Amino acid sequence: MEETRFFCENDRNFHRVETGSSLLDISGSLCRTVTDEKTGIKLPVIAALVDHQLKELEFPVVMPHKVEFIGYNHPDGRRTYVRSLCFVLQHAVRDLYPDKTLTIEYSLPSGLYCELREQTENEDGVLPVHYLTDEEIDRIKGRMQEIIAADLHFHKVKMTADEARKLFSENSQPDKAALLDSLGKFNYSVYFLGGDADTFYGPLVPSTGYLKIFDLAGFNNGFCLQFPEEGAINRVTPLKRQSKLAATLQEYAIWCEITGVKGVGTLNKVISEGGAIHLINIAEALHERKYADIADRIYERRDKSRIVLIAGPSSSGKTSSSKRLAIQCKVLGMNPKVIELDNYFVDRELTPKDENGEYDFESLHAMDLELLNSQLNDLLSGKSVEVPYFNFKEGRREFRGNMLHLDENDILIMEGIHALNPEMTSAVDNSRIFRVYASALTSLSLDENNNISTSDNRLLRRMVRDNRVRGVTPEETIMRWHSVRRGENRNIFPFQENADAAFNSALIFELPLLKYYAEPLLRRIAPNSPAFTEAIRLLKFLDYIVALSPAEIAAIPPTSVMREFIGGQML
Image 1 (spheres, rainbow, N blue to C red):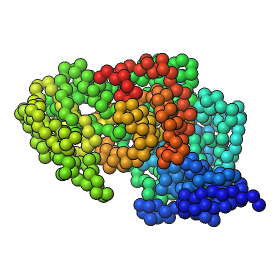
Image 2 (image 1 turned 180 degrees about the vertical axis):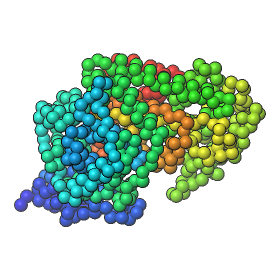
Image 3 (image 1 turned 60 degrees about the vertical axis):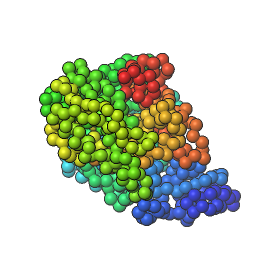
Image 4 (image 1 turned 60 degrees about the horizontal axis):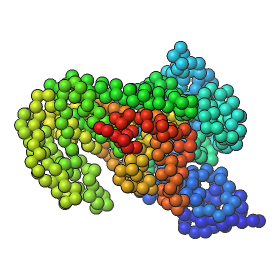
């Protein structure tokens, strides 16, 4: 019997196995579960990292490798679970509604928003939505539970490009067929569950029996597919009906229809056929129209609401958006004045500390709320105030004679992570404040059943900007991202619905743009880096996108949100 040796990261030991043994066989005797460090809960192994690259458990070990078995507590474990659950959902829908097409539209805080659509386009070239009743949603959920209880195996098959395109065209998945057609590859990996086929841009769990925890909840025109909470495999993420967020994502989907881009496949086709500059112009015009619309709403409330607060997560384009919004307000005769909320930090030694004893600069109470509220009320009552300046080098507040007064046509604009948190301005009359939420909420999908993560979109933005402006390596950006996301979940996302207006800074052409800049940065990350696994995942994702050319990038206007990240901004 020929043997192969591999190193297991889980127990930090070398092991010998029969050459060709699958990771599933190996995990069964060596590592059936992994322990979540935060909760101490043992979780079943559902995938593995082989030399820092994500692999399904059917992967055969034929040469020496470094292997780490992962569960739902690992980000790639969660993605593997969710991808597999999406295939079960698709299988259930095809069983019950063979004349309908499932589309997974975009991410919600509670899961994935899905719709059922007719397979024949209407006169506008759109597949009409099939509106589901609660009974129909329960029926789909029941069928999913039957499929999971049957513990059906996921099979992966290599197919030629022509075979795959024909298969998905016949399966009423034109977006998937268009995507495969736009890539020009010779073969593809296609997964089968029962008689159904699909492509997923990452591995699946071995069988449906791994996917016991999920739920479906009616939402808008479709439903939300819920999966386990991070760190809590035995319960789903609670449903949050954030209507303003959902409306913003739906608006972006309509923008995609306006531009004729139904998915990455059609986006690739537009770029390949020379339509990128026209697409850029349309997308930027839509943005400008939205800025003007928000400015109009501020103008309507100018007699009462003299303060505009802007918040948003990392790399959402808050800085550019606040400047563009200020310009639109000036067009209407208002005179925007800006206060940097960072200047209201307390002196460093007074900053609260987190659970690790480190200064928590993202805490609301890292700000001098009493001074902020006092000065805002003074400004609203017609008084002049001396605005502080925070010396970050010294970690102390200073007063440098910067006086501020609000004249008749003046409005005050402030940007910061806590701007939507009512506690930040608890002593100010809420009716005097207009709140804006800015984020990059793409609802563009790779195809019918593979949505694009808005978090990935922002991570690529930040990576490009950090490397260009701050000298931060792509590796550092990736390694910090978890901490950034944790802060957003705590300080920004819970307050999204407090906004009076939402601005979606996502642009239909930005992934082709970001690919041009991000791909070479990601390729610099070495295989022995802890960021390598994430770099490979992002590179595989970008591999499905056709990049813009330098000439097309030059056509992006200097006022574009994207100039904040790639350079050339003139605001």
